[in-house]
Picture 1: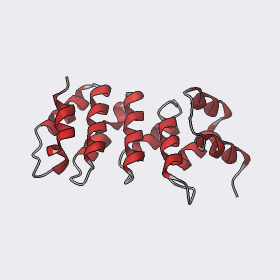
Picture 2: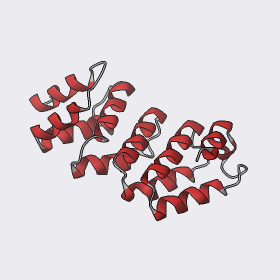
Picture 3: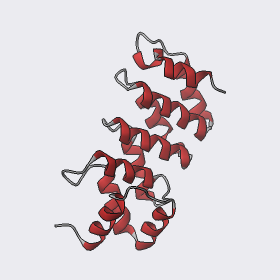
Length: 162
């Protein structure tokens, strides 16, 4: 059975719209509340809608708690594209240098959906350190026969944008 804090977090994440201040208020409750958001984001509660996982992942991108940042890194390679995209946006928002290798690993997955690849490119650009620029250059030079998403028009368009 869910604790009072978990029920509170689940009610917040089930909302139609979550404000940026929500992350701060959850962090103020303490580590158990941050843990509950991480658990929702990573799918630890059975039967959760993807929207709740996406909301939780997006919320992690506004938290400074170490556990939230660890969860973001794990979610970059989530098999559900909506969740992975939210994690990539969170990593970009936080300019998470520690996530660059995870983003590079995601981009090297030949089965990565093109829209997730687009968000990965955007995240690397936003992080903008020497390693992210190296990963981005490596991806720009990649062959579409090895990484099919590299040949997608939407990816080519975002790579052209400076």
